[in-house]
Image 1 (spheres, chains in turn cyan, blue):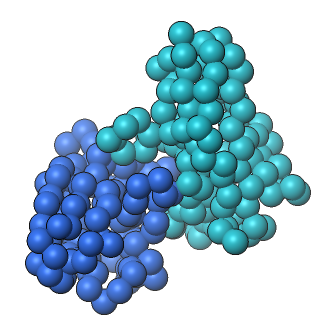
Image 2 (tube, chains in turn purple, cyan):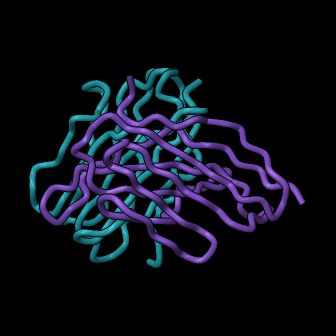
Image 3 (cartoon, chains in turn blue, red):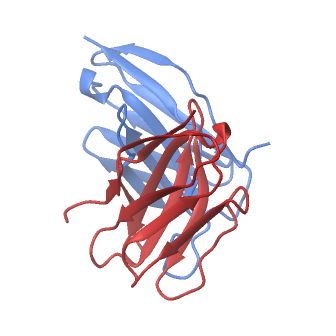
Length: 114
Length: 112
């Protein structure tokens, strides 16, 4: 079993839909949780960064972390065609003041059609 | 520079040849990471440099892979005697103390 599981999709939704992306993990020691967006032939870019359990909102994006269930989610409201990309969850044990290595899910491919 | 710079962006090499991939991190970022992304797969950790500490090499898949970081800045990932299974996108990232990564656009390596 991989430490981080993520459904690869693909996921296809109409413009304006609410998108829900999820990951589960097995290591209860993970403390930092991130979502990255990756466009084709580009490197991943950081979307959301949270520490421990709870919610964090940034514009149309909301990240949720439920450590008791070892489950994290990313919600995208009012989805746009420009949101079409692969979304990767990532998490870290965090040692001292550094993130250290990140453990990634396989990524979910999202297409938002107009 | 403004971002993490990787070179070359594409590399085609013959099986058995050695290759060097370069990463120029964001100035002042203390941590540097190498990951590998194969088609349809997630990112596979390779190696991590943090300041002057000994690097975490636990993700290197074999002794054909090595990396160094000179002067706390530029890093080179070397793959010796390349094999077809080494074909992948090699991504470099850097981060300042205690914050998230910034990735480069990667080097797409094809071993023929």
